[in-house]
Length: 185
Image (cartoon, rainbow, N blue to C red; front, side, top):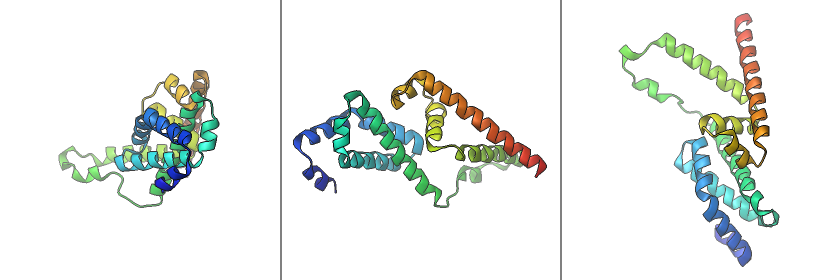
């Protein structure tokens, strides 16, 4: 498929794709790997991203140079979310390391409380939009600063801070609502 796409592109478009690939391939891979935690899935997301870039090369080539990288990152985010959605459709053992613990170190009550809190937090996060999940992931999983996120999303640092505050406020509300429902339910 790639050969067919490359054959249909002009030399200028091929050079543009090669330039984009050489500049941000590693960055895209790292972002995707930090989200997916799988080398093969990260590679899949990056390859799908570049296929989309090739399919929409007219739009990419018409963008001003500083906007090309954020545009590619947004495509990568969408492809990464597609992979996550595929995994949600399959059943798997999420915490298999619990099966390999020493009985003396294992406090079943404490683990139950942790797992219950974790499940409740994850259910609250699931209520967020994909963009909000992406910002949360960049901020807390990738440990990115607001400035880095703002550069990545091509928005102001203040806008990212404000979005982050709104998202955390929304998560607190969802979490507290779940707590109230558990008490009265």
